[in-house]
Length: 93
Image 1: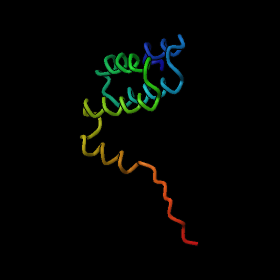
Image 2: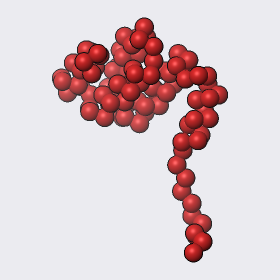
Image 3: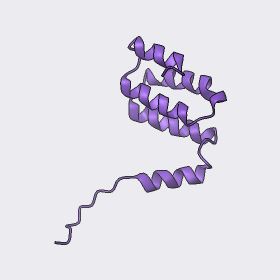
Image 4: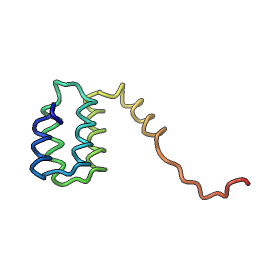
């Protein structure tokens, strides 16, 4: 968080949780450096009302909007591929 002073300050002041800080940091690592200030500011504002899961969704949306992910279709495919599965069918013994 040293590279993101506003993020570090918000965390140090107790304005955001460690998990929220981690989510914001991950997002900032995945966007172009010239977008950091705007993304950081918007995510810190959102963190006041959003839990880490919602904040992560916002981060993915921001990355897609900024085209940090190759393109929206590739990003959607990665989300689809990474979803967890829970089967209720009995396993073969």
